[in-house]
Image 1: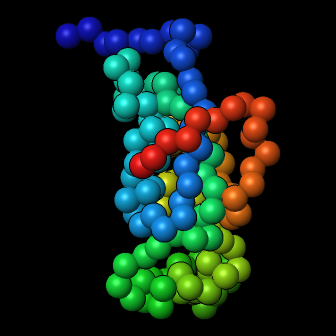
Image 2: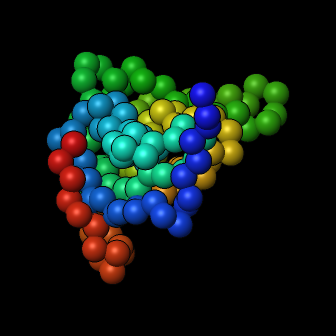
Length: 142
């Protein structure tokens, strides 16, 4: 079987606008990752960047199920002995409203250079406004 290569100049890439108001975090992130990879296109190639750009607004109004606001913990390490810091989702949303959406999308993309490149194609904003009006993003209902 031959490996399919798509010329990056021939791929038509669009800008999409997603409203995260009232959306469940994981379901929203998986659908956005699907569009970023380009799996919604007939010319999908797993090893190339053929996906679209996605602008997410109202990230502070996402919904989570169960007791995730108190029980879901984000960890980070300072680099020092005993330097593991933890913060629940509720407090992280209050401090940095875009972080949980970004992390959920990033976790659903491939690991490595391709995933890092694809993650640059998503723009997440806490409120309803965004600076990408010149690109004329089309509203997509996920």
